[in-house]
Picture (tube, one colour):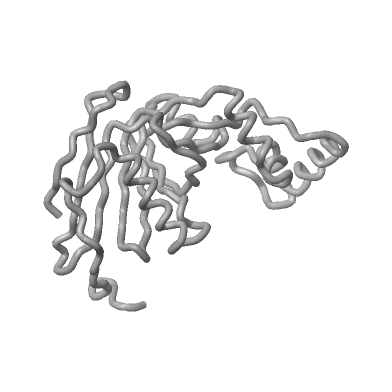
Length: 215
């Protein structure tokens, strides 16, 4: 095993200052995501989703960003999964994007709500058929005996939808994280990293406040 204590990298990112950033964070996020797509490829929309259970214990996992606009950030999953149950009890969450090639990180915090059924239907209809069937097959976060259990369920649902479109399961759909805080981190030399945080009073406010944070 290598020396973990000695593992480190030097950062030499572009400067990031509040006075040179846009008034709203979404336009900056869009620009950063576009650059990340060029540098990170298909992993650019991967993000850590952190939730809290009813006892206050945090849980985190990687999910995929599937849309964003002035309303917030969208992702899709099983409503009956661990994260779905946690969001039902505590409808707040945090997202973290990490783009190593660009030496950048984005943190997003806010309240979470389900998107409407039509939006979930539209997204589900555009998924590959195998992904659609997987939404029926997987009882996410439930203990299973082996992979054969999944293969048998897949075979069953392939027969059910053999000659028809796969409908969206009622237990599967989208969430919208409505941000109240978005922080941009840019790696810099000597660990003097640039951090710019946007905050707003509540989810309905249109005005964002920008500030620089110490690294």
